[in-house]
View 1 (tube, chains in turn green, yellow):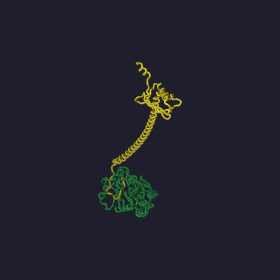
View 2: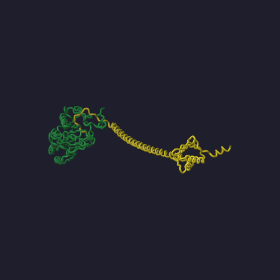
View 3: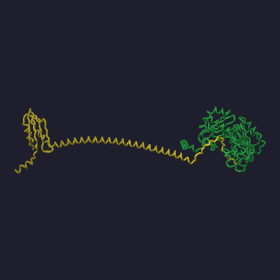
View 4: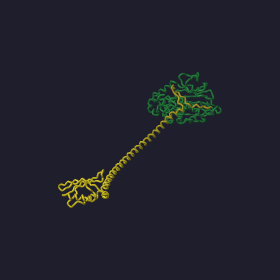
Length: 289
Length: 195
């Protein structure tokens, strides 16, 4: 035991998870520290300060090459994070797909990091990072795939700008899981849920069709929209004919999008639209989990 | 269907040497450490305050003791002065009391002086070994020895007899020295009666 260990015991930091421990919630890793939450698009970068109490601040967004934005605005953004710790939501260059017959062994979702081949079997590709959400009632699963090199590049880009990356996640995937968790709450198959999930996160759109607990179709596109929501409705319009008449729409966005609900009501007439969007929803979820 | 997984999947490159946090119960260790420091500080403060108070008390008592010592010394000095005065007064009182038997003798000597005689100096000494005798030294301003005879007659009337008289006459002054012995007339009569 050296002086650093003693210091960490005396200031109670030894009883908290380390800042880059991915298994611990953000709030426990940084209980009284200001951090920054970045949203990284293909040609945009947004950031939002997280206060010491874990409350997200106002969103700032710039449309340009993220590396250039970081180089120019790093000095402006750095004071928002006391120790430089930040979380990054990758909103581009990922794939969310619907898979079937993946391994359902206990802990398979956690095993993806250590032995992805054992879980994914033939779908495994070298140089990718995965996340997995199983449908407990069927053999389908939602699979998120990231390019490992791209992730490393993002980490090095933020490190070069003077930040310490504490978490890299996919905003659309987080919001989709949140929507699924909010709507699918009844245990077993007695109360099956049918819904058309629409997820919008800083230009990325993901749509999932769930019919009687069965995941039927998933479509995910990045860099679909900027300010105008028309590309979203254009992307989703083909689903209208394939949806059952009683299926409602569950909309979740990282920020409430003005006019989107009305446009969806026009594209999907006679369907109930349930909007789960809240201001700074993604940042709040990121802090809480 | 229930989907409960709310944990955010993290794609960050993992650091290999991440250590899990220590058990919560071990928080007692630093808590006890801080508590012991707080108790030590509180006790030290109390001891320091008590020490200051004790020092102040000691200084106060020292000052009081010094003041009382000075007062005692003043009282002793005053007492010594009073004792000195008392001794002087006692000496005077003793001298007055001791000289009372001589007063008739002195009065008789003074009365025996004739019109042309005066006492220049008169000294009567009584020795501790023989207090019934007086050594008289009388200087008179006179031009004859009659005056001394007259004075000695007067003293004889007071039952004093002179022994070993010496007298010196010169330039109008007579120095006379003798030892006066008081003779008890009753004792003299008793001694003469058997004869």
